[in-house]
Length: 272
Image (cartoon, rainbow, N blue to C red; front, side, top):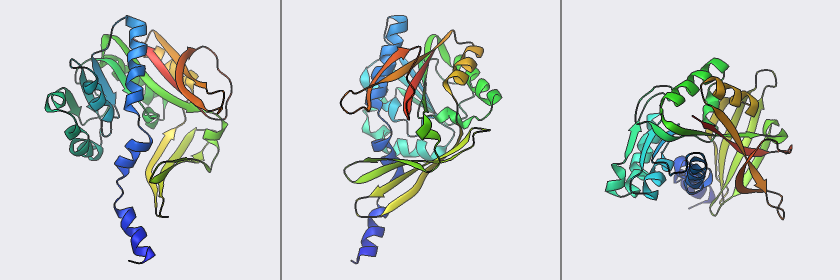
């Protein structure tokens, strides 16, 4: 086999959803955070999770594995990742756990399914709504899809590097590199485009495996719209810094102010 065929063959084996799970998602980190902020607010453990924009619903699967009484609702309008999740993630959990997962292929702005103690919209997915009117409609729906005592968890990013066109962050894994590219940012409209690429150790590449055309929302905007939608509070949880590496340490605490950093990720936790 010559080098060209070897590269082509290795690339053809790659599965973009599998690579995404390995490089982007961390359900084992998300769920303890959901537990912590819910218990902090209500003094008990949450039971029902709704994962909006769930994709392959890995967080739902991890949720039902974490406790025998937990129920999960996964919502996504795209049938492709849902089907991939059924064939790969769902089969990896026990049959009794599978029965506690409800999957809905529909627009997240629909009001359907079990009422959630925790509703999550992760990986900046709600940035797909580019106008204030659209985002407010989604937040109204999220509010209606939650139980009387509930928290709505969203993540945010920002900093100068995240709006720098052409800036690429690379993270290396055993068999591949994950590349996050800020391809476009319009300072007037805040329209932005991001790409995810995967480059393999043999030199083959899967470019633009995922493409995102979003509005770059800011924390004050999102908090204000959440309050307008009816939430009584919208707290910011900011990531701490490792003193040795000067990188994020994965520990998020509630903050009213934060330092200006070239790139950051935070949570907004809205309380119903």
